[in-house]
Length: 467
Ligand SMILES: *Cc1c(COP(=O)(O)O)cnc(C)c1O
Image (cartoon, rainbow, N blue to C red; front, side, top):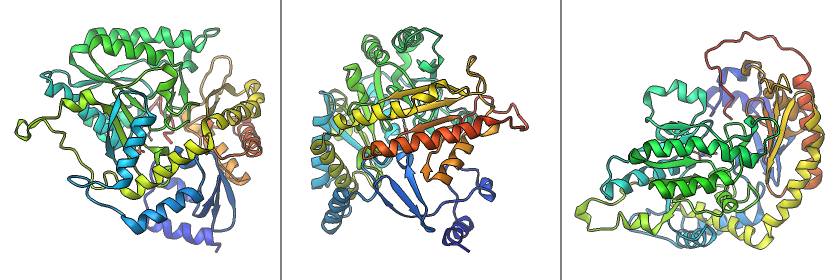
């Protein structure tokens, strides 16, 4: 038995994998990774895979990056962890100073969590609690966009809209207000992104006008709805939303967990709209993809609403055991150093252009409805019928065929349903981008070549593979 097969067997005896129907592994291999270097992962049989999805969107400067490795090694000999209530440490103080300085002016306070979903919980609770402390207990609902994703914990799921989860767990969820997404894939023919985004804002304006008195915050994924299929929209929507939130006295939460740290072409997506949210949630690339850490930034105005004598019971009594872990903060500091020293955002422009050029030919593919891009995220939407944008039935799992082809050619391309996308580490080379485009094209040809017959059930009509 090959080494891969041996590890897979041991794995399948004891593990339960995330976002996976485990029965799939009766015919799909689990790939045990032995090591990673740069954009490449290597399994126990010596096969290599180009990590086109940055290991679930977290890795920005490659695996085993020498600069991040060294910083963590130094930190582990100094202090691995300490309680952050009543105590503090150098990496968390330095990281907080740098995040305040890097993000839009006015975001002056940093609260830590240890993963993205928890960070969303922090933002939702803080917003609600702020209004409560200000004498507005009635402001307790949240407005969210259709097709959005904000994580897996119950409140984070409540403000999300990925059909499978919202269906299955419906009876557990908070009662949120859902507004149609400005998703520009759905724009009418001949209408540009900006016009479509503006037009769709009417729904948000209406929802705010109608509900603002009972609403604490609007939460959005700025510019790219990631897990919802890399659907994209124009920054004008965020600008209009900021103005409207101010007018109606509602907080604006930006979930930049996936898009923060350069993914959209600017360090943070909110920069493209020239606005400052009331809460900015960061995680994923924050530690370069090394360790779980999340930061919720907010304003001094919010902070002040909690600042009082203890017995007024206005404090934010939320905590996670690993809040502000020093090793994770050290990885984040090393990551921010690389951004500062290597002129990353600038250099990414050439890479983004290369991604566009390398996939240009797919625009005319008979089963590709759209090739869309925002900065270092590029997505290719496979469809049954190009003219009518008719999707393939999700049960056919066409994306899975692209995934399998990718593995056979040495690329980790894990589609979202029928959406094949590139979200690579920023250290990818132009030649590696061309290779990815070649593999993706072959995979799309194979996956769309023939009719597949499957039993189509109507249970989850809108279901898309979530990850
Ligand atoms: C991944 C993600 C989350 C959740 O982060 P986890 O660390 O996986 O809990 C929340 N929001 C967005 C936009 C994400 O992409």
